[in-house]
Image 1 (cartoon, helix red, strand yellow):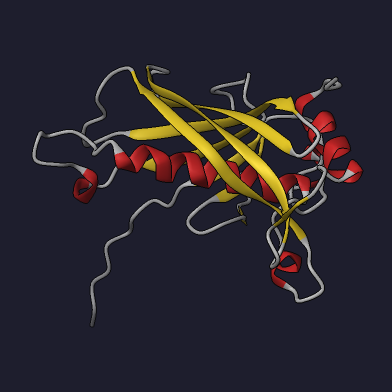
Image 2: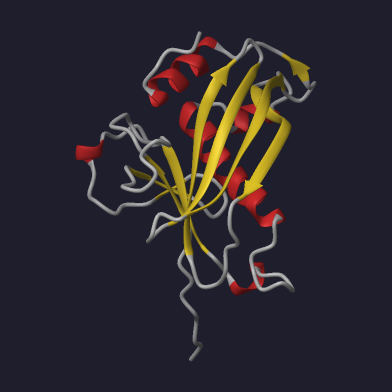
Length: 193
């Protein structure tokens, strides 16, 4: 007989009445159903926390994420941002297997990223990481992130990134496709000029 520890897995949530990553409306599915999005993330329609972010990802803090100073290492925040960013990009159709095909799909690449650490995260904790788009350029997408305690709402960090749309695998910079722009505007609930 073997013993296994049950470790809660992070999950992403779509905070809008729009269709989730599987194309289902909120009322069309049983509550609590998880849908894999990317890596350790799960997409579920609507999260009560961080309502200003249309996509959120929940993470349990693991003991191994702590550093010698007794708090989560600063590099870990960028991994959390990445998971939220990938969940967002998958939701709007900009991250897919098509990107790596020889005929050249379009996908994002990070041009710049940053983090502002507001207070340390320590074990145990469950976090919510939010992602939203704040600007759409011709070939770029500017994102904003926030990290909060899932239970208390205490904000630990905020950050951002500038993504550039490329034709893979040649890495040629291309305009944000109209269908992706439309999907982002629908998810954000506004038109970008």
